[in-house]
Length: 338
Image (cartoon, rainbow, N blue to C red; front, top):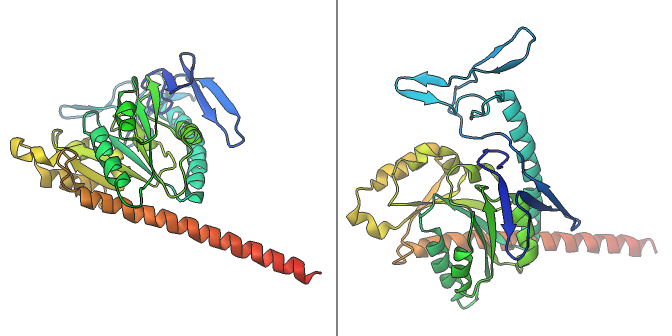
C-alpha cells in the first residue's frame, strides 16, 4: 500500500530484477538492500486553510474522528482535518504521525539523491501529470532536441508506471538510456526507487536526468525524489480547473508546461483561466505553453532546462574549486610543520 495515500498494495518492480508480490526495495548508501512488504497506512491530501479535525473523546480519554465528514450545502469533505484525509477507524493524530514518519524516511533518501546529483552537476527534473497529458511524447521530443546539439547533452530517463515498459521502450528508441520502474498498485515513485535507478543508470557528470512519474496529480506531490524541480504538465485536453482541484501538485511544482496547445482551436479550453488558477495556487509558478507534436514553445522549454543545467554545472565546479582550495590549504600547513 502507498504508505501516505493508502491507494493499494505495493508491487514495485525495477526492470531487470524480480521482486515477490508486495515487496519493495530500499537501497542504502552503503550498498545494502532492504526489502520489505508494504502495509496499510494513512492518507494525504491538501488541507484548505482554516480547517480542523472534528473529533470526540470517550470516557476512557481515547479519541477518534467523527465518522461523518464535515459538510456544507451539497458537499461532504473527507479532506478536512490536520491529516487532510479520512481513514475509517483511524484518528487524525494517528494519520499525521504515520505520514510524518513515512515522509521523513523518504526525505532522507531524497537528500542522499540530491547530494549525489549535485556532486556530479546532474540536473534532475521530476515530470508529473495526470495520465494522457503527453509526458512521454514531450520527453521524446526533448531528448531528440538536446542530444542533437553540437555539445551532445547526455540525457537519461527513469520511467514510472504501474505496469508495462511501453514508455521506456519509446524512450530507448531515441538512443537515450532508460530504466523502467513498475509500481504495481503503488501510485508514485519515491526517493528510494530513484536512488536505486541512479545506481543502475550511472548518469555521467553534467547530464540531464528526466524522471517521468506515475500519472497521478495527487500522491507524487508529497514525495521529494531529490530532483532540482518538479515540472507539472497540464494538457489542454483536460479541464482548466485542474490546478484548483489538485492544488498540492501545482503548489509543489516550479514550472507548468501547458501541452497540446496546437489543439486549442478545436477545444473549449480556457487557457488564461487555467493559468490564472495555477497562479492562485502558486504565484511563483513559471508557465510555458508547448506542443510536443509541433514543437511550439520548445525553444523556451529548452532554454529553461539550459539555465538550470548551467546552474547545476556551476555549483559542481564551485564545490570542486572549494575542495581543491581546502586540500591546498591543508598541504601548505603540513609543509610548514616540516
